[in-house]
Image (cartoon, rainbow, N blue to C red; front, top):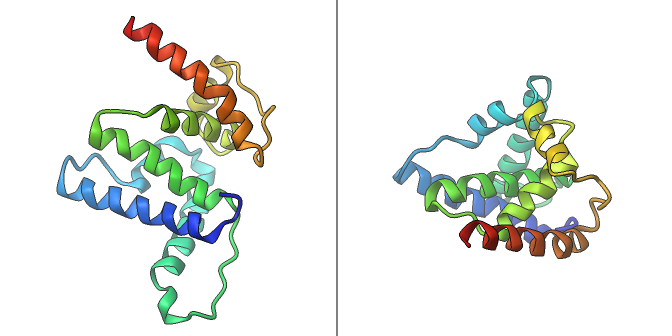
Length: 155
């Protein structure tokens, strides 16, 4: 995304679609539930505040079109993280690209996540060798590994 406002808006809209589908179907929980189970308690209110500000801005942008929202790029990444968590709950499938994004997110945001999620990064022997602005190289690296693991599990 790298700050592209269209991508950020699409990520937020995607989350709203998945949340809406969840309300009409399995009701597997909300984003706020996910935050409380994944994020360290001392960071939950900070993350909720970032999300609420961005979501309200995007939802009500027509009221004040000259208003500018400045927020860290972690906010749309959080929108996508929730989408990646919600989609498999609704479909019983996890596309490789979503699995890859989850791994990337764990690597780059393990500081706010609970210890068990940090342990996943350590278990997978992943590191921050891929800077945040180099997602493309990370995906080129991880997708073949994930595909090979999926094929091994099926075989």
